[in-house]
Length: 212
Image (tube, rainbow, N blue to C red):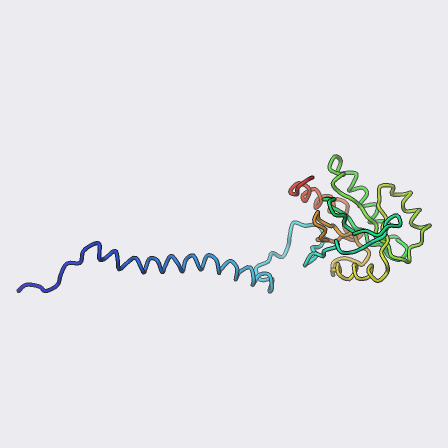
């Protein structure tokens, strides 16, 4: 008895497989796009999977704070806290009312770090941000002790806002902020951080950032 079944040609068999293969390929492409985005979303909003420790010595500010819109007074003129066109890293030392012991320690530590940067020192700027309460005589005294320090004035309301926007549980209100070349305060230090810790961070950042 002859069989009624007809042999399936290879061409016909391949034609049946093509739609299935295309579907699998399409799903693979979709998954490669959607899954990383979903994972990033989960990590960002929940912290799930984030390492407990980082290589940074300072305290990371999350999110970083944009200081470019803050207007300060320097030598009697109002200007942006981060000057446009000056692609420098900056230490902003936020003074207390009279730049007491904690403030002085941060000025000294940041000055020593600046010196130890050697030929790369020109890429970093140090600023002491003071409120209305710090009198001119005290400012003059600080300037004599730190001739390369830039002292800028910020009205008390905006000064308090800057302190609050860069608040971190790991540091005190008298602190040094590390600001990147785009004008974002990204890390904070206080007098509990050593000069070696500040130096380690800034040397690594200078190494992997551009220079104009």
